[in-house]
Amino acid sequence: MSHELRTPISTIVGASDTILNNKISEENKTKLVSEISEASLRLNRQVENLLNMSRLESGFLEVKKDWCDVNELVHSTINQLDETLKLHKVTIDIPENLPLFKLDFGLMQQVLINLLSNAVTYTPANTNINISVNHNNNKVVFTIQDNGPGFPKDEMQKVFEKFYRLKNTATGGTGLGLSIVKGFVEAHKGTVNLGNSKTGGACFIIQIPTETSSTINSKNE
Image 1: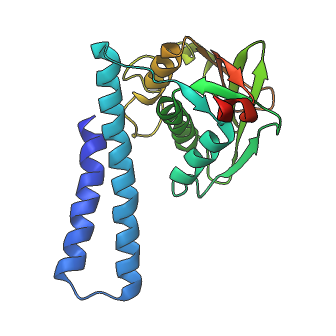
Image 2: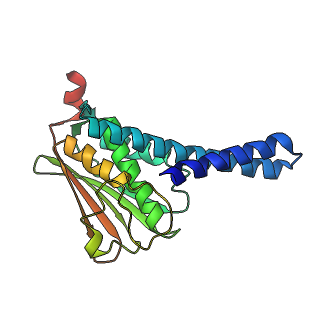
Image 3: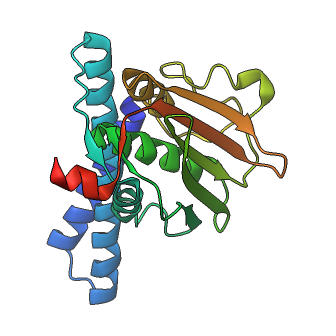
């Protein structure tokens, strides 16, 4: 945990000092500013995860449901992770006729952020990440699938545990992301399951029971 907080802080401090105390070219300055931006985003995600875990463990997590357009939810999440996802190919599959769903937009956005960040961490550059949303039996179903190496079968049930990190993986991550995903989904009375797809790669399926409404009806309410 300390490593995950200190690393981006060190990057920010080092790059800032270099910019302030040295005469450097505009090209190098731009590169350092980019490093500061990336480190800041990484640090912010780690702090968010710590705060979210604190909310879950304290029992004070409040789910504030409102009508949610899943198209807006997914695309706003992708835009927020633009820098993180720049080396991956992201595809989105959402039917045009989906209704609105009653969800906590902020909590579900954090769920997607953690799953997509996890996919980036454990898959090579230029691989695919697919996000799909469907409606099935009064449930909204989110599927996040990549075509990386997948998860070892003997570790699948452990990845949702707090601070658990996969064996034989490079240093990085706090081991909180997937446990927060599980906590936020369960706060919606939903479930999250992990499997490996037949074509290779991890596949997370989230199912949440929810009220639905057409766009027209929701605007009239």
